[in-house]
Amino acid sequence: MNEEYQPPKTNPVENHNMPEQRSSAWIYVCIAAAIASVMYRVIVIQRLEQTSLLFIGIPLVLSIMLTNTPKPRSATGSIMKSITLMLLMFGILLFEGLICILMAAPLAYLVGAIIGYVSDRNGSSRMNKMNCSVITVLAIMSMEGITEALSFDREESVVVTRTVDFQTDQALSMLADQPEFTLSGLPTFLKLGFPLPTEVAGQGIALGDRRTIHFAGGEGEPGDLIVEVTEASNNKIVFSLVEDGSHISHWLTWKTITWEINPTDDGKSEVTITLNYTRELDPAWYFKPIERYGVKKAGEYFIDSVYTQ
Image (tube, rainbow, N blue to C red; front, side):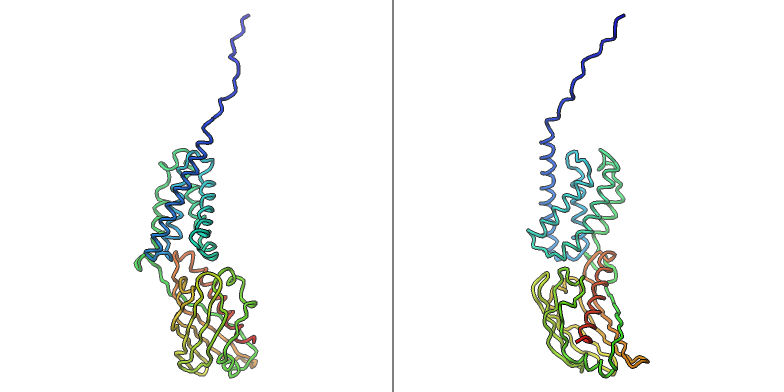
């Protein structure tokens, strides 16, 4: 009986083009990095570095470009690695501070993860079949803050209340004194890279009295925050902004800091500090809660600095 002829098995031909494909992928990454760098320069020149165009727009363009790298194992993996490279480049080459990198990184990774997920889900034709609505929504979100018409309400108010072991007249007298800021008591969040209050000058709680707080360290050049008493009564003192030369003004603009001191039934005092400011960073859904948390910690630190001396 004749057996059916079986052709000899052969080993699959090795793909000798893999090195070229990998090299091409890195060329795409380098091109994307160059475009991201140019976009950053243009955004800074146009003074839009506090808008969503920086924190969402650049990661969006970068992620879309990187989905077209030659046959990546995973678009998401390629995007995440490249975004990490971009953040390191911004930190080293563009001299961005640690705090800016920390604040921008979650947004950049989120945008990259969204684009990567949609890309991987649609397989080899990922860019042709990608859900355009996702890109459209992200593109619209990246426009927030460019103009006032494209901005959400920026006015914020944070209230912190503490009970201190002093009678009202004593508490007012301590507020009138020159406070001493100790960096050891600074909340951990405010030590991440923000400018630190190192010196304070001025005293008194009468109309026209001023405080000058010098900020140094962290990100940006040293600068002074100057406030002045614009309202004074038996239990309420309002400090209004005169000038803010610290780097904090890049993220928020102080308006008023109001102290209210009221007696309690047990002979102590209830101290309430209300901090009014204008949020300068976009998008609001991301930076609003971060700034409110930071301002709350600053309010707690202010009260502790006055009443734990």
